[in-house]
Every structure is written in C-alpha cells, then in structure tokens.
Amino acid sequence: MSLQDDVIAIIAEQALLEPEDVKLDSTLESLGIDSLGLVESIFAIEEAFDITVPFNANNPTESDFDISSVASIIAGIERLKAEQA
Image 1 (tube, rainbow, N blue to C red):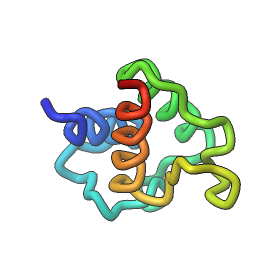
Image 2 (image 1 turned 180 degrees about the vertical axis):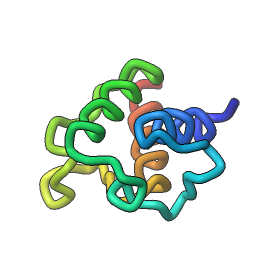
Image 3 (image 1 turned 90 degrees about the vertical axis):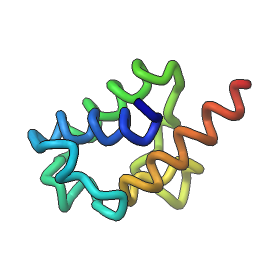
Image 4 (image 1 turned 180 degrees about the horizontal axis):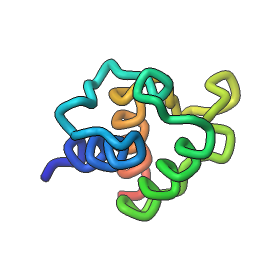
C-alpha cells in the first residue's frame, strides 16, 4: 500500500467509512470526523508513519501541517517524512 492508501485507510477507519468513500478533496468534517476523531486520527497517523504532527495542526495559521483536506494531510505527512530523511 502507498502512503496515500495508508492515510485514507486510517481516516476511513476513524470515520467508520470504507476507504473508497474517502476522497482526496474530502474534509474531515465532511467525513463526520469530530474533534475527538481528529485527535485519534492524528495519533494513528503519527504511529503508522513514525512522525510527530505539530500540536497546533488544527490551526492552519499557526502550523505548517494543514488538515483542511485529505490531500493536504497526505502532503503534510510526505513533507514530515522527507524532513526526517
């Protein structure tokens, strides 16, 4: 599975959806993920990819990690992984 597939699987699990129901332009809100689900998703992503998501990710004006859509989350994870390399 690719990084994109893994992220979509994690988000789908949190939203109680099938992965094919999660689109790149979906927002977490549109998928029914509330603030607790967001925290659980972030923890699952950090564990799956061995990264640390900035604590202020839910405030895009203060964070480089954008959680406004599935695609932006994937881009943020890719950037954090690249910075680790």
